[in-house]
Image (tube, rainbow, N blue to C red; front, top):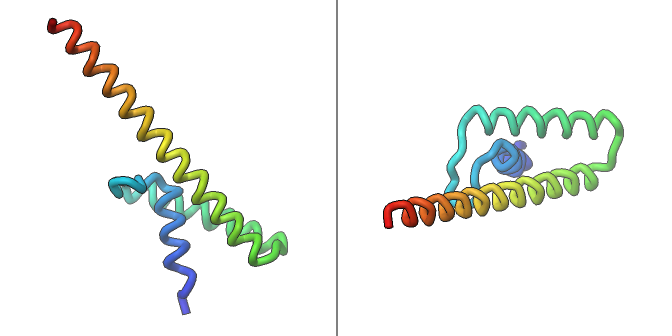
Amino acid sequence: MGSGLVFMAFVASVMGGVSMKDGIGTAIGMLGGLLVLGVIDNSLILLGVNVYLIYVTKGILIFIAVLLDNTKRRLRETLLYREEIRKFKLSS
């Protein structure tokens, strides 16, 4: 009983914005991810979608969430780098 709940918790936390690199996130974000995942999961079940396709859908959602997290992290690092260079040029 509850064998699939670990996967659901992982998917919900990633969808809620918990970073895969440093594990930083908020409880509200994780709750939001859980609610979105629950709505998607429940909708697919009510539509009669095959169980395997539901798992594929969750996998695709994880992949998209990790890609967005990686893109957000790279963008933040690039902006911080540019800001440091701008500060260095102003102080020189």
